[in-house]
Length: 421
Ligand SMILES: NC(=O)N[C@@H](CC(=O)O)C(=O)O
Ligand SMILES: [Zn+2]
Ligand SMILES: [Zn+2]
Image 1 (cartoon, rainbow, N blue to C red):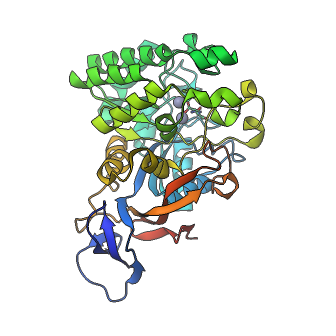
Image 2 (image 1 turned 135 degrees about the vertical axis):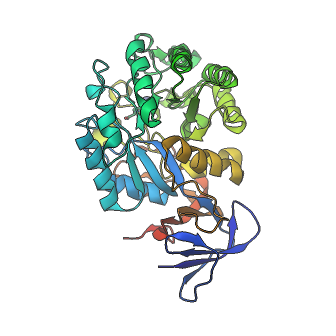
Image 3 (image 1 turned 135 degrees about the horizontal axis):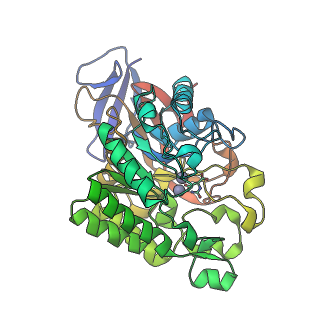
């Protein structure tokens, strides 16, 4: 199938025609191409998420590779990295290959499995990182996300080990001894509400330790869901020294604050917790400066019974795939170069996904792209989302930017805002 996108604006540039042919961007002509009127639409390289929870295997009642892939395509994504905290944990070649295969079968986005660092995420014994790297899933990112690789010796060994195949350890930075019983950010609001707090230092202390470890062994470190102004400063200094560290921020940490906990609605319960307005401002600036490299969703679907209950018993985490780009547009406006870099080009580089985050103006670039209508507004309705879960913190909000179409290697996965197939 060939497509001719008439009058499309690539990264906000002046209207042009873009031909998708044989799975790539083409500079030829094709009289048989299906014509799409793309006037007023902006083309971006397909978004890449380095941090997605797809819940399969184990919690197919909350999300599956199939439903998560639909949510991703509708959000403008062409690749997602699936976190390892499934059941069983993705700590063997067998499990990562299973997830990878399920992704291929769904066929809507490239599902790139992340492998666990330690067996069962338990922090005691290193998982078979080499076997996962050489498996059909070709794992490059390893993470115990949900838990921190707390033992510094384990962290050091893992950092050293993945160097052989240019892998990276993605750390969920949490000093668990400082967060026992934590329900939200430790600060004025937690004191007022009487909820146990997760102090900023519990995140910052681990990031400080890990950038020193990564520097010591010359390895790549990636920091998951950075949430505090202090973490930004640690990263800024480490990068200035040349440490090989990258970092992500979530859309929710760029928009929401701990004040949201005031109503005790568990939809706002997440790890790391929503922080203060000062933290939000620092995170925004860090993303603009490049101190934080990428936006990652930390899409964390949870079944109704795990989320619509008392705050203390609710699981942490919120949906993100279908709202990430609209949230970025509402926070930063139409900064298309920034959005393309932080949501596609840089994440593709970190994850080692060569076919993604390409230059759409160059013939031969794999046709992984999405078309956005920046003038459209829509109201978030949890029941209308493609995710199997409905724990979005944006219910009822009007957001700018509608994903009109998404293409994976030249095949439409979304057309007219609907999943194809
Ligand atoms: N972010 C969350 O609050 N929850 C994540 C785990 C994680 O990202 O730490 C989940 O798996 O639900
Ligand atoms: Zn995490
Ligand atoms: Zn996560």
